[in-house]
Length: 508
Image 1 (cartoon, rainbow, N blue to C red):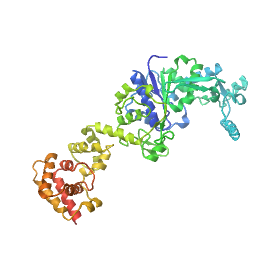
Image 2 (image 1 turned 45 degrees about the horizontal axis):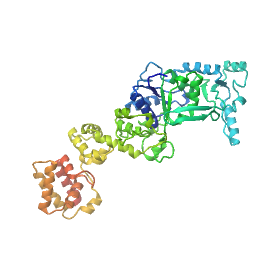
Image 3 (image 1 turned 120 degrees about the vertical axis):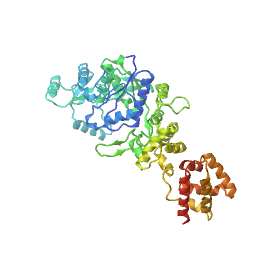
Image 4 (image 1 turned 90 degrees about the vertical axis):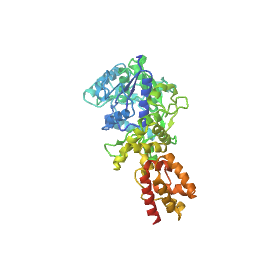
């Protein structure tokens, strides 16, 4: 085995990248970088029937948004190029031929229709058909027909597949860095197809050959691949590469929020959260699926959240930069059991990163929202709003929802608040307050606070009388931050204008 740590993320371009796939990429990246290793992107597109246009570009863009940088890959090249399996198909045939020659694999000529008929027969007898040591000698393959007939079938262009010959009654041991020793009985495995007559290998052969040729030291992948691991172990053995076999680590599943089953796109649609890193537009149906980027998540918050879905640092710390994660990550602290996805916790992570952003960054992001709404104010003004409001939001986009009153005066007023707080003397109280405010020479939160208290004492008005009226005038309802801060930011002239407008509308 190579001494250098080399890992790969090897998705298939069959659609958008699920967040479970991003987590697999993340754990590979963290493991590689922690150990001064290489992180490789390989595209496994051997199944051309499931190929989806633009899925490969989507995968690359998603991982770039996440900040996961590759050392080699389909988009940047490297010493083991090409990194797209469809461009490597000439490589695989000789290994399939080698397995045939050594008696570890065989040609099978059964058509899909014939196999389907057999499956139905088994089903009618309440059992399941496997193409394996029990059935293969009753089927149409190079184990049951003469060599010259096999040759004639191939030369005449008859369709065939190459299947691995799984040994009978053997225990196949998979050593897994997360699950320990996992033992499989060969009797429960079927003779998987390794190579198809269209000249393309299946995932199993291509995966093992590429991992060997690319000197992959560790295969870190999802739990759903664990049942394939004994087949891969056999292929390493049969190809004579057992000593170079990578170490395996099968990651726990990402579960639905209720913990019942694997997280899917349908769960996101049903419960209103994304399951893809970026928005995806299906090239066939044109259906749009939401993404974390477009939903307003920061990539660093998204990555921080994903890291904790299956791994923990063994401490109380929850906020980790990518660099922190590299330093702290170990495979040993990845759990065996599935991790429940919590949409509220995802928002919590984004909220933490909002708090860490400086007001200039937030203001420049929020200014894009204001430009769309044709609102023109200074960046300094937007910064002041962001400082005051960032504790109250999970996403920059929520600033408009929660703070639009800083930019546009209310044109309607909360009827319940009017009913509860507007009295016969309310107009008079607001007029007196406007007059006091107009005389202020120093206009900051401290002087406003002091003058409000003096105003209340001098006019024998309770705070509970004045403050709801001011909030109604300036905001239109009972929400928002401290009223003194609102007054300070929107300014004397605008405050007086809004009070006069409120009196005119409500009093009439």
